[in-house]
Length: 294
Image (cartoon, rainbow, N blue to C red; front, side, top):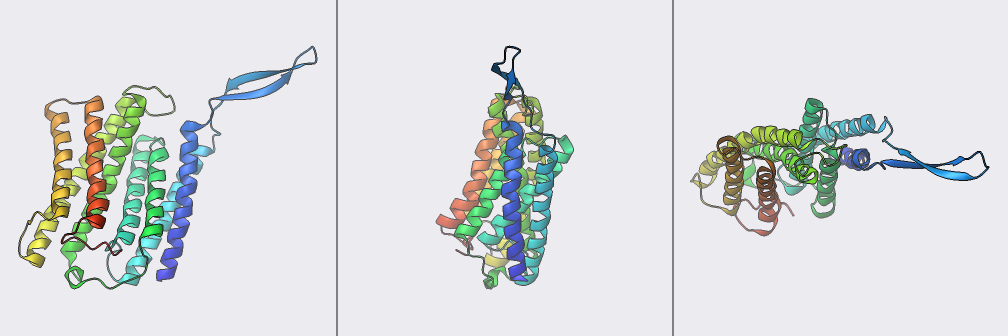
């Protein structure tokens, strides 16, 4: 079961690379095509014409993304059966689950808005997560430490944090593309600045309450495990600061009417907090949340 789950993960990894190439091809396909033509005088000349990606590239990118999501879903299910707990208890499992969640929200937003441009950044990011998981984190099944065993609240807490980070990944990608578009529509193959701002806001409206719920459940579990709800552990503090950044974004946008680059900059800062909480605190800062498994 464990080997089958790993093989499916490798398949999903390959599909993520293929999907990345297809999604990147959509905005970066050459805009001008050159061909040679013969003149009536018997000489040849070069003619430039407008070029667009072949019609098959968009559906191919979507199909590869869905296949990757399906293979990864099955891999996580089999991994969960093999390890006998939710498949996000160490850095190897959690990183793969984060890629799965990011793909899930991308699929939802692509279907919702009919935009594939976000995939040109999000799928390479997912492929990068999988690369990190393969190269740096051990895939072997190891027993959980006693504090992590048979605790449903803990499993829901970690799941909520993973899902919230996944939703916020979409807001980060939309914010980056907003800067690329300079808030307008510099590039016709990318969504307009207004649409990117809407996508970013909607994804925060999903991710922010999930992040709040994840933090609250973590405090509940901490009281049963360590006898206190909050202890300013590095992971707790970093997660709280990240939550405050996104709370600031919603406050500034809703009450101060912040739009454009200022709002996008807050989203980039917020996702930097997500990455710091996830990688830096787990790997390099010692604390009660040091369950990286590396």
